[in-house]
Length: 102
Image 1 (spheres, helix red, strand yellow):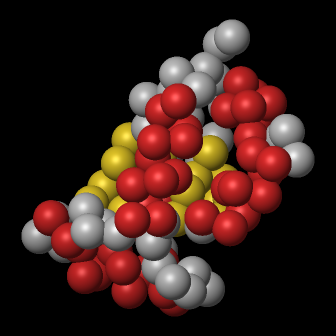
Image 2 (cartoon, rainbow, N blue to C red):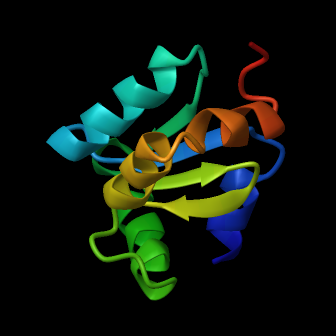
Image 3 (cartoon, rainbow, N blue to C red):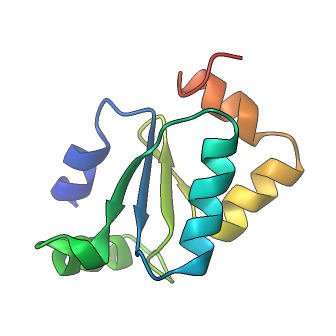
């Protein structure tokens, strides 16, 4: 879990993703559409991607991706992010984390 904590530290938005995952692509596009520039870790393209994925699964993530951290806190996966968006809570969360300013 320390590796996940280290990778999310001091970054407004971090997305753990897989390049072939359509839901990951959708969530990255959604967050970027508000002007945020998330730090994205493509687990299938990293040498230690399998270890990171195991750490995400160990933290209770099923499926492991996308895993979205906003303000160093795990927000969740695609369902949770879309739910926040539909409720109008995603943009305020991004603002609070200083991922966007407008």
